[in-house]
Amino acid sequence: MGCRDVHAATVLSFLCGIASVAGLFAGTLLPNWRKLRLITFNRNEKNLTIYTGLWVKCARYDGSSDCLMYDRTWYLSVDQLDLRVLQFALPLSILIAMGALLLCLIGMCNTAFKSSVPNIKLAKCLVNSAGCHLVAGLLFFLAGTVSLSPSIWAIFYNSHLNKKFEPVFTFDYAVFVTIASSGGLFMTALLLFVWYCACKSLSSPFWQPLYSHPPGMHTYSQPYSSRSRLSAIEIDIPVVSHST
Image (cartoon, rainbow, N blue to C red):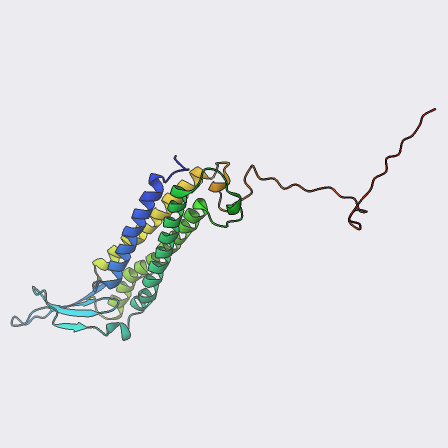
């Protein structure tokens, strides 16, 4: 594995992270989290389906693509607990994932433009390529957990609503988009962890989470006696012994 160059695993993880964040954006904005289907037995009327999102609500007649009712202020009066949790969880997951993407990009740039010779000025730097990718992988894993848990809960919450009211609630495809995006975040984290585990065995300090002293750097200390600590000049008088 080309650990000293920008490897395909890091590039693929970066692209997978971008696609996952885009999927989370789509899942957050789509008004297709829950469907409420109202069936009428009057032949002169059409069945009505209410599409509920995290921020808006839309009501449509069967066979129509236009919203009969479009509520833009739905996010202020959400009365379903799972959707209210998702309103906070998904934006938080997107922010965490974007921070991970930034760290991943910094790590790749550091890998692409770094010098192969250890630099004494960078010896005390706390973040290098391996550190960036490792922290980015942890953040991707955290973002996937934050977005996946409430999305799965929304599926089970439909059963709760059907038992509480009538079996007219079903989850829509925004749930699948979000779950797939969360899986992409886990895949991104896995690729970064695999890359790090394959490269951490290198002896170079540039491939450790924190910079240590490069092999060519040594700290020299001059041994002093207890007397020399008290005086600036120490004079040692040799003693010559004569044997008879």
